[in-house]
Structure formats: structure tokens, C-alpha cells
Length: 455
Image 1 (cartoon, rainbow, N blue to C red):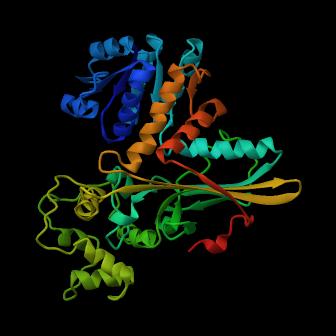
Image 2 (image 1 turned 180 degrees about the vertical axis):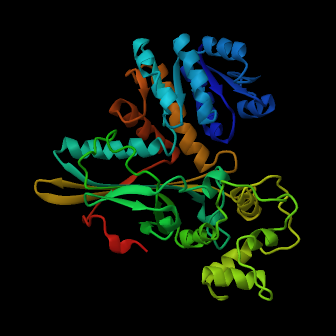
């Protein structure tokens, strides 16, 4: 038997485990699934004979080393900051490793040791990062193979609620990490290149600068800029590109509404609110409004935001029940961002029968034989249920497929890496299509990066 150690049995591991168990007989696999909650790990095994669930504490050094030593390859689905201890042990015991997380400086520091030992440390092989890398590099390499020169690359991705479960005015629910949604865009200005010129959007302007996107069969979306669109410029070989922009997808109108929270200061995570455990939702929003002897909280909010009572923005705030004097925050020493997350969770938590949706959209502009051309590549994935969500599928399946490709000797390049080589992305993208992760590529007239599209 070939042994795979999976550390972490959370939401993103569902489809990963399901895929590998389905392949376990034909591929001669045994899975050891470790989690702090052995009950959670057991549920994910579904009593499969080729899986063993164990209680696993990443900080128990003896157990960690023992389990890694017994494995042929290690999959870490832990939070990103915990991968490094696993990775060091994988170097010591000469084991391949796969994660869906961004390559940290600590992980990158192991590159030489991984190469020296012939080890593959595959990172960023989930959704975003992951499927975005693979689907982008496939088209970029095809353009280069034809002799084309890249002049524009835009890439957008978003985790959303599926149309059949879209039942609120925000057209949004939390499908992953609510805290990351609340803090999106913070920590510096968004940076990208437009027609050869660096552009910056400060946080307080970010959600009023959106680009509109059309996806056949699913309607209109908007994208706001990621914090650093240039992170992968050199990695993708796009140092000379004129326009490079990466963004997050939402339904049209979301960003304008979210901007209300930004302008009020409710997304701030840098200080704590006094008596946060006892204040009401209504008192919370009033903290950010000027004092007035007679005006209500509602009137002050509309005045502060410059919105009328018949504005859809007002209806969106009312829908969140944010002015309720009887709902108590109930969080000790909480920041504004943490309180906002609590309020939004009341309305934006997926119901048991809800489904989520992933939308990814790439635009490739290039020159070939003196002509400017463009390819648009779009992918939509709908979740099955609350266990096998679109997010779990698109994060977990590429991780599982890469693991099997490594075990079978089809991925051979050693070192700390992300999936930008053909030996990695070609077989995985092909297999993903069998699971409903399909990119539809279409040649369209080249129109460059049009600033008039920005609202």
C-alpha cells in the first residue's frame, strides 16, 4: 500500500478525501486522516476500509514525526502558518508534500533542501491560488507557443452563492472564511499596471472602482482589485506586459453597498470597542455616527452615507437588522471588524440546502503577426451540498490530483513550487473537467483595458 497522510479534515478536505478514497483500490492507497477532532476525521472517512482516522496534534512533535515518517506523501490542509513544521519534517524524512496555501518565505527557504533530496513541495494547488495559476499558464503558454506576445492579463475569481440559493438583497453569502471577507482589501493600496503605467487604489476608494464582467448563463458580475496584482508578474513571465490586473468577483451592486461599511469605519480591525459584549447592534452602528440631540440613528446613518430612504443601499442595511436595539453583540474585547462579522453571519450564513458557486474569469490580450487579439476564459462551478461545496471541490480536487500525479511519477521537478509547469497543469486541468470544473475559452475582439468601464 502507498500511504498518504492528510493533516486537517476541515471543510476544504471533503472533496480531497472523497477523490482519493474513490481511487484507493485501483491506485493501492491507504489514507491516514489526522485532525484535532478524531470524530471529524472519522466522518470524512465514511468508514472506508482504506482510511484510518486519528486524533492529530500538530504541536505533538513525536506524533507528527512518527506519522510523517510512515507516509509516502504528506498533504497539509492546516492553516498556512502551520505548514513549516510539517515541511521541515518532510525534508528530514524525505517525503513529498502538497498544500493549497501561498508559498511563505519560510517554505521558500526549504527549496534548496527539497531539491537536494529530490522532493516535490507543491504549494498553491487549490482554487485561488491554484486553478487560477494552471488555467492562466495553459493559455499563456499556448499563446507563446504560437509566437504571440502577451500585452494584457486580467484575472478574477470569487466565491459566491449559487443562483438557486441567492435570496438576499446583497446577492451574497459567506461560502468561506467570513473574517477574510470583512478584511478584504486592507493592508495597503491595490496595485496594478494599466497600459504600462502603475496604478494604485487606496482602501477607502477600492470598492468604488469596479470592472463589469458578463458570464453567459449567469449574468453580470463586478470585480474589485486585489491588493497586489503584480505578485505573479515575474512568475508568469509577464515582466513586459502592459496591463496586469487581478480582482475579486461579486454580484453587481455588492461593492457599492460594502463601501458603506468602509466609509463608516466598521471594517477596522486595529482597535477594540469598549463594552463590546453588552452593546446592541443599534448602539454599535451609532458609535460611528455624529451626535445629534433629536435625529434617530437611521436618519444619521442616511445623512452620513448620503443615501435616501428609497435607495436600494438603505434596503440592504435594513435587511441586516443592524438597527435592532434588542440584538446584543455578545463579544468581549471585539474590534469593529469582528462585530461586523458577527452581524453579517446572522444573515449571510448558508442554509442547510443552499449551494455555493465559484466563478473564475481570465482575459488574455496578445499580439500575433501584427494583430492584437484577445481570449476570454470563464469557469463556473456549482456545489453539490454543504459538504461537497464548490469551494471544497475546487480547493481539494487539485490537491488530491497533484498528490496522485506525484506518487505516480508524472510530476518530477523537485523543489518548492507552484503549479505553473505543463507537467503539472495539463493532466490536472484535463481531469478537473470530469468533475465539472471546465474553462470555456473564446476569442473576442481585443479592447484593452478600458478605464471607462470603471464605475
